[in-house]
Image (cartoon, rainbow, N blue to C red; front, side, top):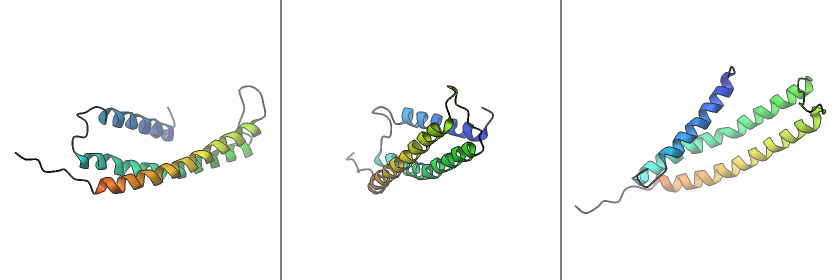
Length: 119
């Protein structure tokens, strides 16, 4: 990928895959605070996604306005761009709901510690 932004997006997807591997199984995250340590930065990441979707939408609008979009099936790009913008808007709404739930869960996780065990 020649585009640095696309490479960063691919790196983020790969990082999430690594997080999934690191949180899988009974041995993963052996103590409650470790769950919080993963959840807190994920909440920050999710909070940043609406801006990304908004900027992607702006780019689609800009490209459409400049006549830069060509559809591989030969159709006019207006309807496809409208569809993309609708889906990106839906994604923004969904990620806001995800953010709200994740922050509520992360707030509770923040107060969890490890119970002392008897020796």
